[in-house]
Length: 451
Ligand SMILES: *Cc1c(COP(=O)(O)O)cnc(C)c1O
Image (cartoon, rainbow, N blue to C red; front, side, top):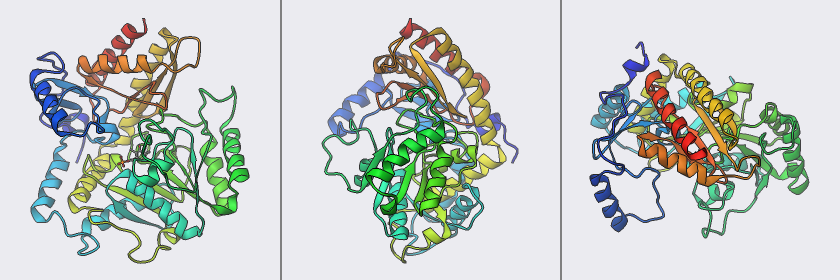
């Protein structure tokens, strides 16, 4: 299949079009029903309710069309309702929707594992297991690392995000809103400093930042009790923090020398998002275990742990699994998505998108001293907002810019330990014109807020 952005988008017109104020009357009705029915602990970014999606556009229940620069948090990388994915889902759903792989195995599960084993970094022998969510993948990676090493401690980083289950809350750095009031947390988790070039001492190299982190791990935990070092190669929820070059290779090397399992959490960065199949590819880093989820299956719940065959095979039969893990419909969606990424060169598309986005964000930073940093890789780009002339975070500016974009029909997301980062994660099939329009709206909104 020859794929161009045009061939990849569904029937929803690829345009921004507002026909009511935001939120419109039907969205307001749904918001009222929601507050009577849905637990308030589950929050939403957008003030509108979605009726359909296609390509890089979301249409709400009042008929407003939004340019989606968030992809449901890096999930719909192949775009909304991609026909090849919709067909694959429909065909599989008509055959069977569930057997439980632990009861009745099927080919799709095996094939997704083959794809993961082939495409994740490194050409050593690998095995995979499938789960439902990123958090579940991270939990299972830690289980494998502990089982294989016979050690318990896990090293994680400042600003890390790994999920909301009990173990992954412990692994996640940020207290509010993820951990507040939800303790006690799982033990044997130790946090060390991340490489954060904007906020690290001027000129600190990646190797020096790794040394700072690992010296702490060594002194406070002791390498011979450490099962795993777990790191996002580019941090997601924590603020799109891109570590200085050399940081990840130094960590991988330290782990290899000490029998510590190096786990790359590629849940947000994986599957072409950063311009390679995986973010670790950029520096040729080969993790022992890789966790994947978000971008793998166009929104169908699916996640994976992939790693060195000897680590993955260490766990006894029945030690890994779950009722739904590797659901056949989700696997069909993943296989169609992966085929599209390959045939459509969506990694290349991510690099082109990244160049366009970074250009606009760079111009913004040049105009506004409140934009302290433009960072990211490929179609994962962000600005960090501060009080001008300081490094003091400005979450109010980020919130105002995001809300302004939403009112104008452009979906952008915020993130960061202080909530002061605007992040862009467009679908990798977005057309140049639509992307340009979305970025113009963002720039105009930021000009207004930061004036
Ligand atoms: C989103 C995310 C998770 C958690 O994934 P869920 O599917 O929400 O459980 C874990 N790690 C990273 C890096 C993420 O971005």
